[in-house]
Image (tube, rainbow, N blue to C red; front, side, top):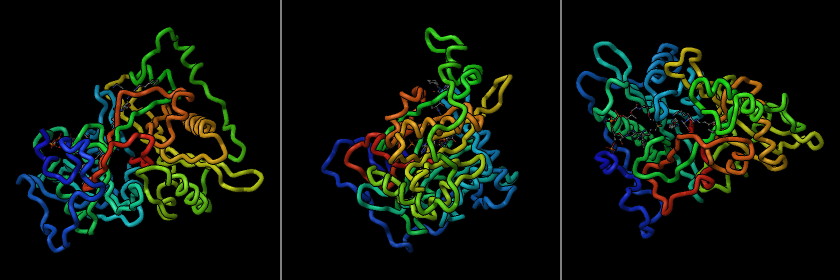
Length: 388
Ligand code: NHW
Ligand code: EN5
């Protein structure tokens, strides 16, 4: 059934439920000298390139490939449209490797036709912090699909990760592969219900009119929590402490240090937004919320070309109820003109989704680890990790 994935050190379907298998690495690391030194062979017309995302031209080529060929929903109505600024951010965290930004070009025309990336991350699984690659942006041009190019891309990124003495990876996908460590549900909170209906993102509910729907999703004009403000550079140490302490409770979560928090959570215009609650009395940082900006192209609509979506990222509540904190996040997103606020049912998100009028989407997201087995499938609420 899975001619490629059956050959890889990942949990296999036949082993699900076999609790005699131990947790941890599936295969041991080999010595670096045993890692294949040359790139994998591509079909003759194609060549590997390492993408320098600092070069504006390269960033544009990658952006164009993804804009036209990356992930769509099951009815091909929307396609993710990561911005150039977003890609630049997502691919250059602390300690990133340029060699993990991999493209495939047509030799003759130099046209970019495939892409895959990794970035390094420390991820804790139960009590063990493991250095991993987070793999993302796997994309093969629509005209080159089903030619078994993806397995070559995956083997090549694996080889380049191994060359850095890293032997594990984390990734998410909308498709089922061998085998998910957890499966999450996407939830959506309408901010601009009229547009969402017009573009086919949502449908009018039973016994609802447009005006009742608009009223249902109305939000206050400003945030309600005293001391709620945008995160600033001087907040990095306090936010790191707050987040590290919060993420302890999850089975799988990133092990963020201050450099990671600075990179991943300091606000970046049109890329990532972070807010916190500073106690007006003690000036303590007690709560935190964040979301990233990922628009989707609307395919074949006369009136609109992009859907502006915010995706819930990391949120921590210690004093402000999570429900109130996330309601403030919705208000911010509405003020910033987002059309929809999306969230997965990870971490403690289930405690606010229904009450804040999120509805379940038609998409699921499966989480995977490469070369790391767990005895049991995790509940989404046991995941403390959000990938972009
Ligand atoms: S998920 C988003 C993936 N991208 C898209 O969906 C974009 C639109 N689709 C495409 O571009 C986030 C193509 O359909 C792709 C497949 C390229 C997806 N992950 O070339 P063939 C990520 O980026 C398997 C993994 O003929 P294709 C995460 C499939 O099961 N495997 O297909 C990426 C089959 O193998 P099987 C996937 O449609 C994580 C084989 O590919 C997959 O022309 C990558 C067929 O290949 C997916 N999303 O191209 C893994 N989709 O065994 C990282 C299909 O079943 C692993 N396949 O026969 C870790 C590596 C690092 C390790 C370090 C130690
Ligand atoms: C790697 N980082 O299917 C990610 N999105 O629900 C790659 N549906 O937007 C993997 N089909 O339900 C990504 N509207 C996998 C996800 C791929 C994209 C995807 C889904 C997630 C989505 C929307 C639009 C559906 C259009 C038709 C959806 C309903 C919203 C409604 C709002 C009001 C309350 C009820 C729900």
